[in-house]
Length: 276
Length: 276
Image (cartoon, rainbow over all chains, first blue to last red; front, side, top):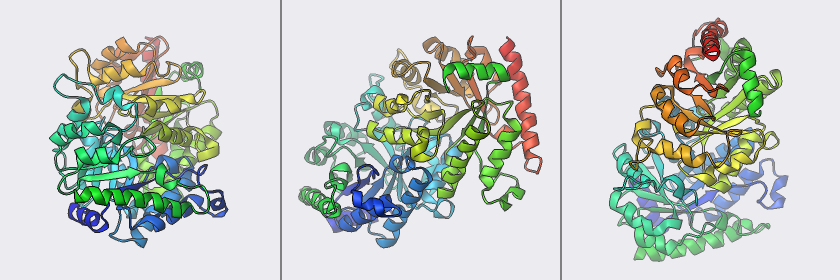
């Protein structure tokens, strides 16, 4: 999906909500365990109940890999469902945080973006910047696909290295400055955690136009109002993710309905924020 | 596998060779394509031909994920084969370069270390340090399992961020200093690329006793002699990886035999180096 289509989607749905599909077998409603593939069934019902309120879905790969080959199959079915049931209506993010030497990142790019090879066709993948340019560039050779580079994450450990500084800038700022020339605002985004919303103005001074993927609203304590205050641009420029608050709103048979209620609250707040 | 067993393995085999199973469908001998699972068949023949010369195998996950669910199955069969055919004789490394917020890294740890959950039981996993302590710690709660933290990688892009400096130390040194207290030399190693062998003395001044996983010998241009000169300790302290030079030594039906010849050359050189 290209940038214009993404922006059109945001305007049409009056939403910049991404729903994180961190689907954990131990947390999903018990009645789903009767299905052949409970993880896929859960995802399908969540997507069906929220697809008009969310612009994006983001399966985090860890929650699938922990189930081995079966988990990888649930993941493959989930991305196929997103693409086939709602074509052109949803942006899909492989939250995989990959990154390796160039030769190897090429293979990761095939895994995420080449359905003929892997069976999966995501719009975007999250990548870790530690290994530098050649670890990131192979993902950028796919037209209308995106990389989302970790800049400032929402967790406590973000303080360990991301604020390391040469007295002129901090590592996360160095990552933003240096990496933005590898691609463009048409194929690169950055992860900036909602738990550090006040730093969004520092981020915006370096990447004024790039889309930012913002995790950490909800369970991790970040505020949507704060994120919008410092991060919104004329093109929106934000994709805000919520996972646990939405997908685990209920552990009963009404889980999809309750997920919709939580998603609707966020969409309505976003509609207000987009109006300014 | 614990540190003592690993050191015993090195002494018994007079080798600190790791063979990287970067198994690419486009590069393996054509006759293997008749098998149901050519990737697994290739790995099995390579392992059978070299298991007495290598102390470790390191499948890089990218080369499996690019084949989707089928690739994940090849990977699962490969680690099961290593564990079942040669119990206690081989150290296994999941070269996955994972790392996410704590809640999520727990799931990645299950994927790598908990066969009841994922079907996979590796001894070690490579992890990216960018997200800090909570992204790394969940892996350390498994007894006799290891994390191998990226410090100084072998690729060109390593220069982009790993040498970012606060004038007292460079980022890779900061990663070494800060992370080593999260675990110990009993459950942590570091990736240090052979292409920067002269920097191994700087690395050794911070982590004198930790094992180092050294990629980049061979195809990437690093020298085994140089690595040993700066990196060897009284307990060896090194696991040197070679992938393409060994596994693609021949593209014919003699691929396993030729792989053994290349592995033997390295083992013999290592035997000399271990003697001092």
